[in-house]
Length: 204
Image 1 (tube, helix red, strand yellow):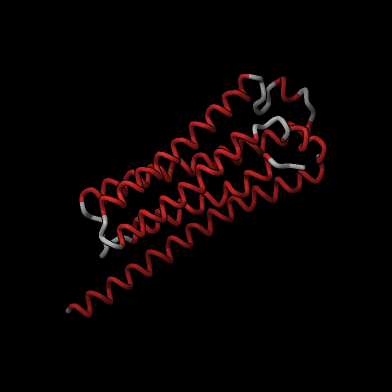
Image 2 (cartoon, rainbow, N blue to C red):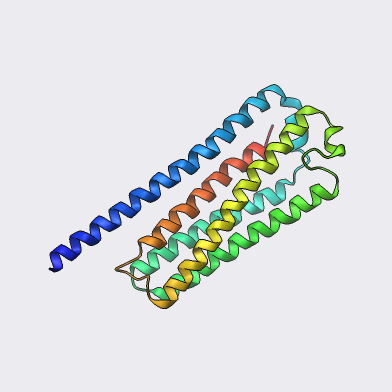
Protein backbone atom coordinates (compact mmCIF):
# COMPACT_ATOMS: atom_id res chain seq x y z
CA UNK A 1 0.00 0.00 0.00
CA UNK A 2 2.83 2.37 0.87
CA UNK A 3 4.55 1.49 -2.38
CA UNK A 4 1.38 2.24 -4.35
CA UNK A 5 0.91 5.53 -2.48
CA UNK A 6 4.51 6.50 -3.18
CA UNK A 7 4.07 5.69 -6.89
CA UNK A 8 0.87 7.78 -7.11
CA UNK A 9 2.59 10.64 -5.31
CA UNK A 10 5.51 10.53 -7.74
CA UNK A 11 3.10 10.46 -10.69
CA UNK A 12 1.18 13.48 -9.35
CA UNK A 13 4.44 15.37 -8.80
CA UNK A 14 5.69 14.62 -12.32
CA UNK A 15 2.36 15.54 -13.90
CA UNK A 16 2.18 18.79 -11.98
CA UNK A 17 5.71 19.76 -12.97
CA UNK A 18 5.10 18.93 -16.63
CA UNK A 19 1.90 20.97 -16.62
CA UNK A 20 3.73 23.92 -15.12
CA UNK A 21 6.53 23.75 -17.67
CA UNK A 22 3.97 23.71 -20.50
CA UNK A 23 2.28 26.78 -19.02
CA UNK A 24 5.62 28.58 -18.70
CA UNK A 25 6.38 27.72 -22.33
CA UNK A 26 3.19 29.50 -23.46
CA UNK A 27 4.22 32.52 -21.39
CA UNK A 28 7.60 32.52 -23.10
CA UNK A 29 5.90 32.44 -26.49
CA UNK A 30 3.86 35.50 -25.53
CA UNK A 31 6.90 37.56 -24.59
CA UNK A 32 8.99 36.19 -27.46
CA UNK A 33 6.41 37.57 -29.88
CA UNK A 34 6.61 40.99 -28.24
CA UNK A 35 10.41 40.96 -28.25
CA UNK A 36 10.36 40.15 -31.97
CA UNK A 37 7.97 43.04 -32.57
CA UNK A 38 10.28 45.29 -30.59
CA UNK A 39 13.28 44.17 -32.70
CA UNK A 40 11.47 45.01 -35.94
CA UNK A 41 10.60 48.55 -34.89
CA UNK A 42 13.97 49.17 -33.27
CA UNK A 43 15.72 48.30 -36.54
CA UNK A 44 13.52 50.87 -38.31
CA UNK A 45 13.84 53.66 -35.75
CA UNK A 46 17.27 53.22 -34.19
CA UNK A 47 17.95 56.87 -33.40
CA UNK A 48 14.45 57.51 -32.08
CA UNK A 49 14.60 54.44 -29.84
CA UNK A 50 17.96 55.57 -28.50
CA UNK A 51 16.62 59.06 -27.78
CA UNK A 52 13.52 57.71 -26.02
CA UNK A 53 15.55 55.21 -24.00
CA UNK A 54 17.78 58.01 -22.68
CA UNK A 55 14.69 59.54 -21.07
CA UNK A 56 14.13 56.48 -18.88
CA UNK A 57 15.75 56.28 -15.46
CA UNK A 58 18.53 53.72 -15.52
CA UNK A 59 18.76 54.06 -11.74
CA UNK A 60 15.18 52.86 -11.26
CA UNK A 61 15.65 50.17 -13.89
CA UNK A 62 18.81 48.92 -12.20
CA UNK A 63 17.17 49.02 -8.77
CA UNK A 64 14.23 46.99 -10.04
CA UNK A 65 16.63 44.46 -11.54
CA UNK A 66 18.41 44.05 -8.22
CA UNK A 67 15.07 43.75 -6.43
CA UNK A 68 13.81 40.96 -8.68
CA UNK A 69 17.10 39.07 -8.67
CA UNK A 70 17.06 39.21 -4.86
CA UNK A 71 13.46 38.00 -4.86
CA UNK A 72 14.52 34.99 -6.94
CA UNK A 73 17.03 34.15 -4.21
CA UNK A 74 14.45 34.42 -1.43
CA UNK A 75 12.02 32.33 -3.50
CA UNK A 76 14.60 29.58 -3.94
CA UNK A 77 15.43 29.69 -0.22
CA UNK A 78 11.74 29.31 0.66
CA UNK A 79 11.47 26.13 -1.41
CA UNK A 80 14.69 24.78 0.04
CA UNK A 81 13.48 25.48 3.57
CA UNK A 82 10.16 23.72 3.14
CA UNK A 83 11.90 20.69 1.68
CA UNK A 84 13.78 20.47 4.99
CA UNK A 85 10.56 20.80 7.03
CA UNK A 86 11.46 24.33 8.10
CA UNK A 87 8.02 25.79 7.41
CA UNK A 88 8.47 28.93 9.50
CA UNK A 89 11.69 29.84 7.71
CA UNK A 90 10.04 29.11 4.37
CA UNK A 91 7.17 31.40 5.37
CA UNK A 92 9.64 34.20 6.12
CA UNK A 93 11.32 33.86 2.74
CA UNK A 94 7.95 33.73 0.98
CA UNK A 95 7.00 36.95 2.75
CA UNK A 96 10.27 38.57 1.69
CA UNK A 97 9.60 37.54 -1.91
CA UNK A 98 6.17 39.17 -1.75
CA UNK A 99 7.74 42.29 -0.24
CA UNK A 100 10.28 42.54 -3.06
CA UNK A 101 7.51 42.04 -5.62
CA UNK A 102 5.49 44.89 -4.09
CA UNK A 103 8.64 47.04 -3.94
CA UNK A 104 9.17 46.42 -7.66
CA UNK A 105 5.58 47.38 -8.50
CA UNK A 106 5.80 50.53 -6.36
CA UNK A 107 8.92 51.64 -8.25
CA UNK A 108 7.23 50.91 -11.55
CA UNK A 109 4.14 52.86 -10.46
CA UNK A 110 6.18 55.96 -9.63
CA UNK A 111 8.15 55.63 -12.85
CA UNK A 112 5.00 55.38 -14.93
CA UNK A 113 3.37 58.23 -12.99
CA UNK A 114 6.32 60.53 -13.68
CA UNK A 115 6.17 59.78 -17.40
CA UNK A 116 2.39 60.25 -17.56
CA UNK A 117 2.70 63.51 -15.57
CA UNK A 118 5.07 64.80 -18.27
CA UNK A 119 2.58 63.85 -20.98
CA UNK A 120 4.43 60.77 -22.17
CA UNK A 121 1.90 58.00 -22.63
CA UNK A 122 0.34 56.22 -25.64
CA UNK A 123 -1.43 58.62 -28.04
CA UNK A 124 -0.74 61.67 -25.88
CA UNK A 125 -0.25 64.95 -27.79
CA UNK A 126 3.17 65.40 -26.20
CA UNK A 127 4.37 61.98 -27.29
CA UNK A 128 2.92 62.23 -30.79
CA UNK A 129 4.88 65.45 -31.27
CA UNK A 130 8.13 63.48 -30.85
CA UNK A 131 7.53 61.45 -33.99
CA UNK A 132 6.60 57.90 -34.88
CA UNK A 133 9.81 56.23 -33.64
CA UNK A 134 9.53 57.47 -30.06
CA UNK A 135 5.78 56.84 -30.12
CA UNK A 136 6.46 53.21 -31.02
CA UNK A 137 9.14 52.94 -28.32
CA UNK A 138 6.88 54.14 -25.54
CA UNK A 139 3.95 52.15 -26.87
CA UNK A 140 6.04 48.98 -26.58
CA UNK A 141 7.48 50.15 -23.26
CA UNK A 142 4.04 50.51 -21.67
CA UNK A 143 2.74 47.33 -23.28
CA UNK A 144 5.63 45.03 -22.36
CA UNK A 145 6.42 46.40 -18.91
CA UNK A 146 2.68 46.61 -18.21
CA UNK A 147 2.08 42.95 -19.06
CA UNK A 148 5.17 42.03 -17.07
CA UNK A 149 3.84 44.04 -14.13
CA UNK A 150 0.57 42.09 -14.28
CA UNK A 151 2.60 38.89 -14.15
CA UNK A 152 4.43 40.18 -11.06
CA UNK A 153 1.08 40.99 -9.47
CA UNK A 154 -0.24 37.51 -10.31
CA UNK A 155 2.92 36.02 -8.79
CA UNK A 156 2.36 38.01 -5.59
CA UNK A 157 -1.21 36.76 -5.30
CA UNK A 158 -0.01 33.21 -5.91
CA UNK A 159 2.65 33.52 -3.21
CA UNK A 160 0.15 34.95 -0.74
CA UNK A 161 -1.92 31.81 -1.29
CA UNK A 162 1.20 29.70 -0.74
CA UNK A 163 1.84 31.55 2.51
CA UNK A 164 -1.66 30.71 3.75
CA UNK A 165 -1.19 27.05 2.79
CA UNK A 166 2.21 26.96 4.46
CA UNK A 167 0.81 28.45 7.65
CA UNK A 168 -1.98 25.86 7.67
CA UNK A 169 0.54 23.05 7.17
CA UNK A 170 -0.82 22.04 3.77
CA UNK A 171 2.64 22.61 2.33
CA UNK A 172 5.45 20.61 3.88
CA UNK A 173 8.43 18.41 3.03
CA UNK A 174 6.08 15.72 1.69
CA UNK A 175 3.90 18.09 -0.32
CA UNK A 176 5.69 21.11 -1.70
CA UNK A 177 5.13 20.89 -5.46
CA UNK A 178 2.69 23.83 -5.44
CA UNK A 179 5.31 26.07 -3.84
CA UNK A 180 7.96 24.77 -6.22
CA UNK A 181 5.74 25.50 -9.22
CA UNK A 182 5.03 28.96 -7.83
CA UNK A 183 8.79 29.43 -7.61
CA UNK A 184 9.22 28.43 -11.26
CA UNK A 185 6.63 31.02 -12.25
CA UNK A 186 8.37 33.67 -10.16
CA UNK A 187 11.76 32.87 -11.68
CA UNK A 188 10.26 33.20 -15.17
CA UNK A 189 8.92 36.66 -14.29
CA UNK A 190 12.40 37.63 -13.09
CA UNK A 191 14.12 36.28 -16.20
CA UNK A 192 11.76 38.21 -18.46
CA UNK A 193 12.67 41.42 -16.63
CA UNK A 194 16.37 40.66 -17.10
CA UNK A 195 15.66 40.89 -20.84
CA UNK A 196 13.30 43.87 -20.61
CA UNK A 197 15.81 45.94 -18.67
CA UNK A 198 18.53 46.17 -21.35
CA UNK A 199 16.20 46.51 -24.35
CA UNK A 200 14.48 49.55 -22.84
CA UNK A 201 17.01 51.09 -20.46
CA UNK A 202 20.41 50.28 -21.95
CA UNK A 203 20.06 51.05 -25.65
CA UNK A 204 23.38 52.25 -27.02
